[in-house]
Length: 443
Ligand code: PMP
Image (cartoon, rainbow, N blue to C red; front, side, top):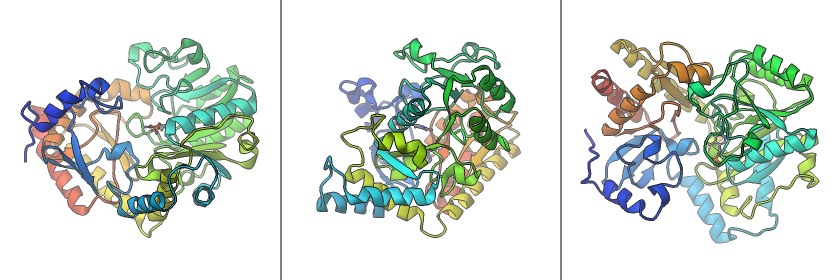
């Protein structure tokens, strides 16, 4: 099979037309040509389970999976049905409380015991922003620590040092905080101290130097926005102890890892309880919903309306019925075991293919998400990725797979996602496509 991307396709034609009315032709920076969808992104006609179909009727095995939410695949039947039934039966928006909120919050608390009290919002960016704001309100301090290569949404609170050029990073011992894009005031950047991840000694020194100034450390407990980087052994426990010692709040941004790394997220997998947790993505299986929460003591400031939590669409019926049904679906027997089995089969299979071809790669995986780095060395932090990962080679792999009906995100600092809809046949077809793609990489 070879899918072509020339100017004769309907995708091409629609993308040209889109650019006349939608700025840049796409509605997120990760969907357009600047994100590597070259020569143009496929225009999608529909999704079904693990597969996507474009308007030219090309069929793809999808590993972008909406960048994580689609843990149950495209058009998950039971969730879609629950949403449709709920909005037809009750309506969509009340601007007043209703019972499904507490039902959903209880199901979250059952999986994430650290989230004794929960608050809902619409996206990971919003919920993360609230988490940071809450930490600032509780501690009365304005500075936060975030890690290079991590992403916590597009707000001015955290969008710094995402994937900066090596030359801009500054020394490891004193990293610069670099706004991810134009329009972020440098005044805000001064409130964010950036650090390399997985380095306890450096962080210990930073905490000592800034004693009494820091409200929170925010981290993805498994880095999933710089490929996939698991925490070094003991690192999350170190973060927990150090934040306690310095009276700082620990925020786990589990927007990707929550309900995906394990039923109870990375905090269950590594047995570390943060003060505040942020969930989104897999929580709604593709419908827009997010949540943050923590202990009663931590959430008290929100409960008493000391911090402003608002949002016209918060906990609307689509969001709540989707989250509620998704949590039930994920609790069906074998979900996480199957995801682990398929993830291992595919990631290990890919690794073996490259090994046989003599191409050095690192395949770094947790459960159902992983990344392949064209790198001779393991990637433990953003600076490793910036230095060693060959992103051009990754683009070649992406293009070669796209031609062969396998869709992955073009940026080598993204990742592959599996869903419960992926099958053994998908895995086999994908491994065949990877094998077949090797000559494109060498040539
Ligand atoms: N945090 C993390 C770890 C994420 O990966 C993302 C999105 N990729 C966000 C926050 C922001 O979520 P959203 O796109 O729903 O605003």
